[in-house]
Image 1 (tube, rainbow, N blue to C red):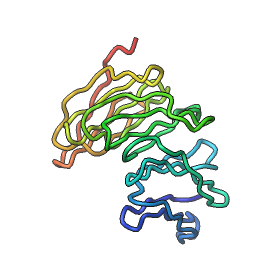
Image 2: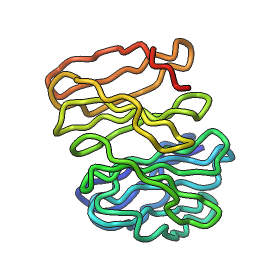
Image 3: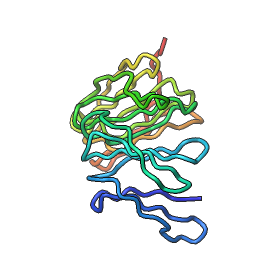
Image 4: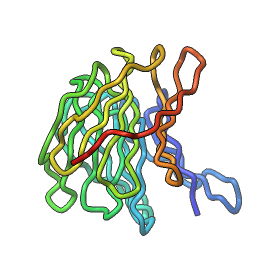
Length: 190
């Protein structure tokens, strides 16, 4: 029912009603809000606020904001596991990815990836995260159960966008150099 847009320069989130195409709410989040994840039941949104150490928790019924505090320096992107128990966040300022237990709102694990992890995606089964590391020009694969990096491979210059193809299991990566690369996931997770 909504389109959610984080606004980097105005430090807020716009909530757009799909039926009317009107902005129905503007939610103040702080310096440089970025990635957004929405719960499967569409009641809650999570927004990384890159100019902070926190993740905003937005109630999509009344637009009240709560916080998951102190996850780490410069949270850039967030994804939810398919079951909705864990939230994963890239920490651009630390070169790590964290796993947050949503029941306790505490970081329960972290893993170092490449330099400046930016966007990430999660496999359909929730077993793997794929992360682009902007300054090291790499893509990392992390197993969610153990939060272990099992692979880091070279990408083209300045990888910035990533998505997981649910039909093929391939990982698509876009780069500021103007390329899109498709990677087949062939690493044995076991």
